[in-house]
Structures are given as C-alpha cells and as structure tokens.
Length: 279
Image (cartoon, rainbow, N blue to C red; front, side, top):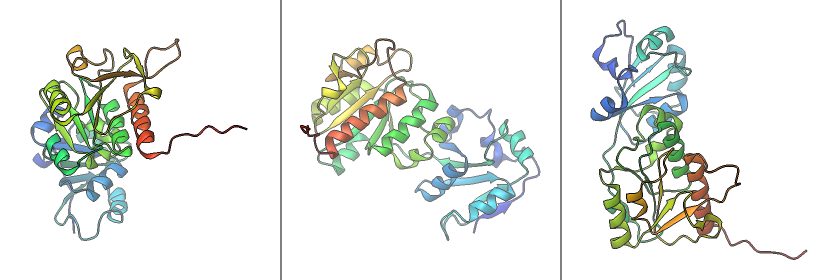
C-alpha cells in the first residue's frame, strides 16, 4: 500500500521539487521530472519509470486508488492536502489537483536500438527546438507512429520538462530518449555507418513530401520554431523535404508538420498503395 501523509508545512524538503520556482534545469539536474494531471500521473504509475511521490487532494486520491496497479508502488509517499495548499506550494491553481515526481530514465543510445532492430528503424531528431509545448505534442506523435527513439539536440528542450510531459499526455514514458551535445555527429554516424536516410523537414526543401519515398532506415529532423533547421545540420542531411502549402502561408507549426511527415512514412510502410479505379 502507498504511504499516505498529510503535510502541515510548505517547507517539507520532499515537497520542494513541486514548487514552480524549481525550473526545468534544476529538476533535470537532480534526475527528476514533474507529471501533472490525472491521466498523466496514472500513466506514470503504470509505466516502468520510478515514481518518488504523489501530491494530491483526498477526493482525487480516492479516485487514484482505483486506477493504479494493485500491489504495485508499495510504500509510495502520497501527500494529501487541501487544494489551497497545493496552489500555494506549486504557485498556481492546478486544474486537476494531482502531481507526481518521477525519475528521468537513463538516456538510450541509438546503437542500442540498432542492435535490437535490423531494419526499418525510425528515429526523430530535434535541432534547437525550444518550446516544450510543441515538443510534448511531437512526443505524442512519435509514440503514435512507432518512432524508435527521440534524439534531442543541443539547445533543444528536454521531453521531460514539465510542460512537455503534460502535453505528451504521458507518452514520453514509452519513448526512448537520447540527449546529445552534438546532433551533427550522431546524424553523420547514422548516415555513414548505418546507411540512414537523414530527412530534414524544412520549407526550404526542393522535394515534396507527397512524392518522396522513404528508405528502410530513416531519421527525420525537425528544427527551431522560428528559424527552422540550422545550416550545419542541413548539410548533414541526405534529403530536404517540404510540405507543399498554399502561397498565403509559409509553414506549419512544427508539431503539425511532424505529424504529417510521420503519417506519410507510416502510410508508405504499412498501407497498400492506392489504386486508381475508373468509374
């Protein structure tokens, strides 16, 4: 059974990571992240990741007890308090008053994935993608379309940032991640050693997505929300592919563009070719 606790002070050391002033960098430095909301916390408790504690109200805890694995999470600290207590601690009124602290898993190296799969690997890399809200949606897209690993380049937001975890709806708990200090080096290795097709999703591309053909092993690269993919990364890519758009607009939101690219690849790999029928 979980260990239910009723905190009387906001200054309890174990509660300090929940404070909004504890920024993403501090949390990641300590190897932890914050999960927020009923569905996200339940998915964390059902995942293989370790949960350090839960913070919620009595009403939500009674609901949560019915939705977590029986016999699991013995001795898990569950802090129960009034909603006002949570708002003071966190710094804002949490819409769904339940949060949890999870431990960030060790990075997965691309070579580990490649050792497990002989072909049809699908990787996704982010180049200076800084908005955690966008990244959370991208993570959800990745899990929906069976991406094998997310490679987060330098200056990219981590998918374990609070808002990224929330927007992924807990999908991040099922996606291997590699944080790298040199995205170009990893992409060059995938291209030269493992014969990956490195596909930049970028409006500057000369190839259109609807006519482009993906190879067996692919790494799709998406870039910064404002400036796109940096030149040094573009130079490593084997293809630069665009989504044809109306001339009244120049680009999609990066999370939308990622979904379109992943759907097109999924369609090519899993669906039979379309057949034209004369009527």
